[in-house]
Amino acid sequence: MKIFKILGVTLLSMGMAISLSCAKKPAPQQVVKIGALFSVTGPASFLGAPEAKTVQMLVDQINMAGGVKGAKLEAVIKDTKGDPENAISFAKQLIEEEKVFAIIGPSTSGETMKIKNLCEEAKVLLVSCAAAEVIVNPLAKYVFKVPQKDSQAAIKIFETMKKMGISKIGVVSSNTGFGNAGKEQLEKLAPENSITILISEVYDKTATDLTGVLAKLKSKKVQAVVNWSIEPAQAIVAKNMKQLKMGVPLFQSHGFGNIRYVKEAGEAGEGIIFPCGRLLVADLLPADHPQKSVLTKYKTDYEAKYQEDVSTFGGHAYDALMVLVKSMETAGLDKEQVRMALENLKGFAGTGGVFNFSADDHNGLGLDAFEMLTVKDGKFALLEQK
Image 1 (tube, rainbow, N blue to C red):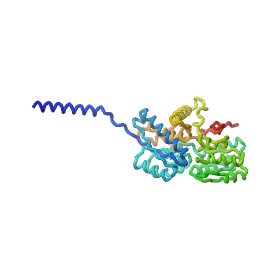
Image 2 (image 1 turned 45 degrees about the vertical axis):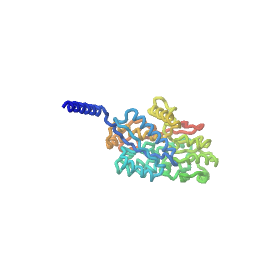
Image 3 (image 1 turned 180 degrees about the horizontal axis):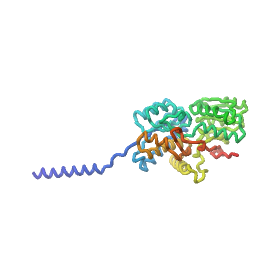
Image 4 (image 1 turned 90 degrees about the vertical axis):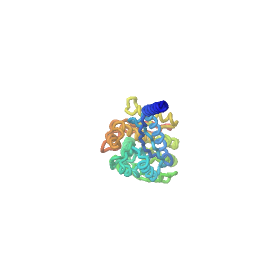
């Protein structure tokens, strides 16, 4: 009988111990998966590599600070290699298998357009890191983008040209989604900005020599050249123009915002003019500028962690993730509520500008998000305009 009593007490004690142990064990932290489609390798790696690094750095920082609404973020990053077919395949995988909360990216406009309807039909938020205006025009309920509009980049270029007395230009663009969209905006907006495009040529994105194309522009006696692309060809255009002794200004799109393009162009890159966000000149901004602290912290954190120069493309990934996180902080972890919060996000200072989204504007940036920059002594500098 004593044995049974002792055994009973022992089992009771063990049960209480197990019960207490279970009571003390914290509940597992909720994990929210964020899908990311970036061109980490391949011809568009200048865009995707810094984007992927930025997202991972930010997710680590957010999780160390306690996550979002108590939930831990998990970045599920896929390398599309800049291939639209890869983007489609990975987007389906993220939606159907990974059950992601949202997707940020892709890096390029062509990839984004390939998955725009896919995300819309699945009712999965897509915050693109690509620039073409067609991503958000026509409007799609679940699709947003954070880079500045290509139409506004074209307007900034034309405004600068007029101040410089330039009215007759030549245009070259790559045969990509971004290149085609930019060419369309330039041709559409030139007449109303008193600019005449004497010649417009398209080149293959893999081109390694553009002297033949640029010789056609030179024969037309253009006063300036606009190149619209995101490929390494941006440096090739500058080098070939120097070889041809064209002697006219070269304007680039806002896709020029990576110092690696400048380094590849070498001396030929001096004097290139382009519209861009303020990340590349953060140190030149006044202390009270609304973006100053955001730009400075991101630039410092990124360069310290990866030992490489920050770029506007990594900045696009920063903006894509952080507008999503801000909306989650406002609305909680309900997908539809977060979509509505993002659509109503106002006054959010990011790397690309101060965002003010609305039901009619899924980009949220105005013309004032741009500064006109130039290349001076191998570095980016503010363009001094008279």
